Image (cartoon, rainbow, N blue to C red; front, side):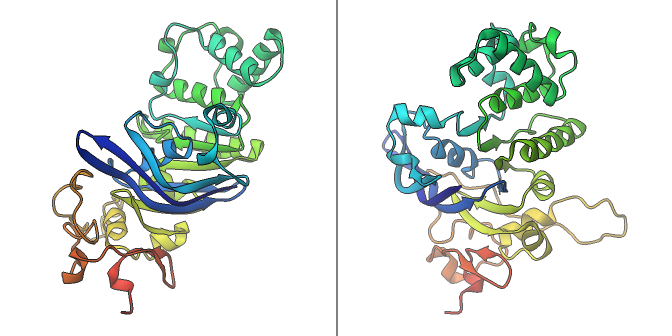
Amino acid sequence: MLEVKNLKTVFRVGDKTVHAVDDVSFEIKEQQVVGLVGESGSGKSVTSTSILNLLPPNGEITSGSVNFKGQDLLSLSKKEMRKIRGNEIGLIFQNPLAALNPVFTIGNQMIETIQLHHKVSKLEAEKEAVSLLKKVNIPDAETRLNDYPHQFSLGMCQRIMIALTLSMNPSLLIADEPTASLDVTIQAQILSLLHDLKKEFKMSIFLISHDLGVIAQSCDYILVMYLGRIVEKGTPHQIFKNPQHPYTQALISSIPVPDPDHNTAATLLKGDIPSPMNLPSGCRFHPRCPKAFSDCSAINPSLIKTNDSDVACLLYKDD
């Protein structure tokens, strides 16, 4: 369904160039859930906005391709791209309150969106809005159509955003940190809801998160990103059972284990993630890597296949 090849996205900041996404390749198949995980600032959200070409004025895709159902989205005009956004590819933002207009009712926003994308009357659009709110478990949907965003909890606003996105009937849903601001119980409800809706609407989902627990329980395939590059990719079993890259190993070791007899210490990484305005030479992870050696500061490794996952690390190169 979606194939991203060698995608590179940069931002111009003064006289400097920030390489936010660097040579990223992956694919999402029909009705598949692909997860993208990494620390804040690793380029996850820029990857999603690059797919939809929703970059700010100082952002630019310098190379690569984004093929969706056989057409390269990067070659489309702005008018053609607007037909893809929403209709074919839906996007759920990290902060639902920022995505909803505070001065219009939920019903107003949903009805307008439905009528924009489907040729239906206002009454038909209202019935569809009520139906969608019921699907995402908003109680008393008919009455709550007249409420404003501030009258809902954050979790309910996220459900409304999901309903708003589903109203356009996309075949691919990009969910950018959809549970980031929610407590654990509501997180589980939102993830369960996305899973059920994926089956009902036969969608594919691109799930972006910094939470390995969310990724582990929700995805068919996982991409691990560090400073704009994919450092490892594989199935959940490959990634969690036998992680290859030292960064992935460190991330997984940091997950708390609720077992008093579990004595394995977490791998502590030195320092913070470097600024993308001042990238380290060679492998971008080497300044923090507990297994780094001399070549790591000079050679930037590409992804290679191992017996388990695909990994970008010199530890696995024969030469």
